[in-house]
Length: 420
Image 1 (cartoon, rainbow, N blue to C red):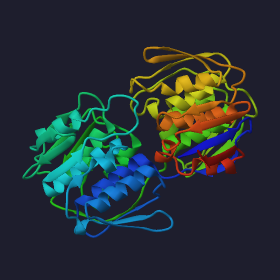
Image 2: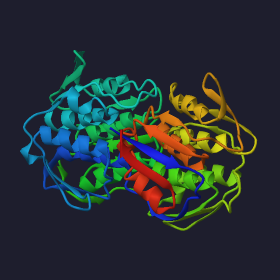
Image 3: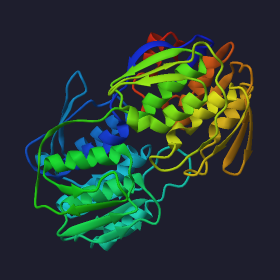
Image 4: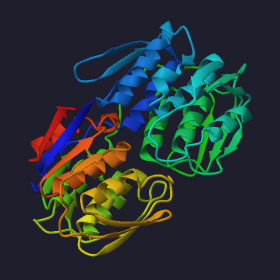
């Protein structure tokens, strides 16, 4: 197990390219099993533990997977020989539930371990299962596994009781090969959902309305292999923007889609950053200034993303003034607060709200990451802190950020990965 050692107070300056979005790539990998003809090639794939785990899972199912030096992944599902997703492979990754819809749609059978992942709150899979049951699947849960079967999924009208990204993605994939028309209401509108829909449509699916509240899918008989490049990671984009802002630095992010982080850009402008954009770049300059506190409230896209809440909490901890951060998505997503308090942050919790009084400085300390985005926020706090910060349990960061310490080092950070 490794840890990161960070010597803070070095402004982040320079250019960086963000990697492909994990949350777009993972459902595409799962969707590859639905192909009846040809290979699927996915490009712009980030080098992450969750990607590696998904590839191992598909390998275990018999999918032939090849990967080149640039992390382009080719998948041949014609060699599949089982439809089983075991606990030892999926216990660390909630996205493993995304194999359920594709397996049912293509093969009529699936046995998938109930998923794990970050301990940031309840992530019920009931909405996935209820929707698939409405489409004709027989589902049984026992001994920690979901067993599902059907002759053929039948198109249906599905209304999610609350917005679910993975639920929307599972239904998009399942309904692509279902008989008849499926209407998904209260659908997630995240860019990764739209990217998956574009990917499936290129394979031959018939999906309309992705990016809106209502998605219509007309089932088709077969899907074909394609080559597709995943969109850039908007959360990595936002994290690097905050890294420059929290250190009073300057950064240009390449391979970005500014419209996908519009609300993050808006909040960083409120904090005092000067930001300019082109079609594929974002430039931020703090001009050495201390940021101003900003209030945020998380919500489904296009509202402020819960995956950026911890990073903005770190920014507010050294900003001038007081801020309120309201977390509406996950009930346990303030676990980074206790660790930031060890560094001198003044943060008080009240149910799903954090009241942050900005300090003129944080002081480095040993801290422990509790989940993926918390680990990013502790790295950001360490970059801004006086002295040395040691971040332990960084296996979380490797699930969602491609070589983050190497990229930060190229931008002027004094950061080192060492074995514990």
